[in-house]
Image (cartoon, rainbow over all chains, first blue to last red; front, side, top):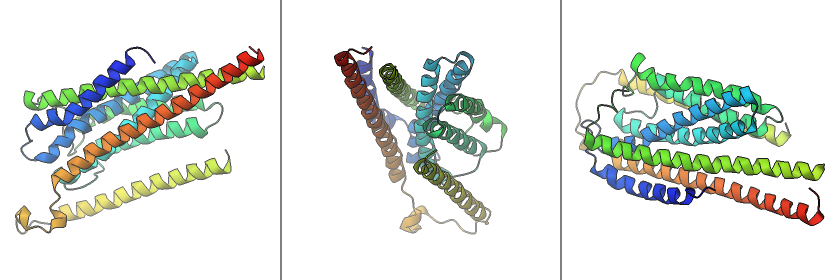
Length: 218
Length: 101
């Protein structure tokens, strides 16, 4: 692991320990009250979910063009993080919605598109795990669909009728709410970078293991 | 694909299908409830305890789920990484000992 990994991991742990305190200082939203505070974990998770989809898609495009195994390893690592952060988003969302909207789930365009994107990432991992030789290219193609879905998820709330808040909510947040939110976004982003680094390292070690086995066979 | 693998894939598929069906059913119930006309307002403290939905419980559940899921994932990646690194070191030591490149 690089030298910066351990200090960054300590900073990340401290930031996560501080998030409940920072969030506690944010005022309640007028109609949702206490349950609104789920927003401070839900939205950063959702952004990292979308970031994972983009990283996986870009790495897959580069792999399809160059056939460089490094890009394939990057895509695989990003797909796993997409599943993780997608799961966090799809679980914290309904917990918030139950109180704010009166229902666990609605088939509105953003929720449905997010579920589809998450299932594409799950399909990517299943394909890589059980697809056998040659599944890398097929999975890379699948990742393109996941990436194509990302801008659709983001802008969907502005073009379709939905009860999901519009994208204008975040830029117009007052400092008292925006400060804690951006602190949480920074914490989640640092977590994403650290997990991504760990996961890529795992793939590098697996590639090294394969190389050693090949050298033994020869 | 082996029989075990096929069984796992089949079960995951059935699970996803069931989740989607449950979601659709729950959603249609909510729309049916929402379409009913409101005949009276009831103060929240007069609702049965099961319907009062304290927000704190949902908030704690959301935060706990995030932290536990991230912790489990970190443990999972660390364990996989340690196992692979040990295997690499063991094999490289074997290669050196036997003098095979």
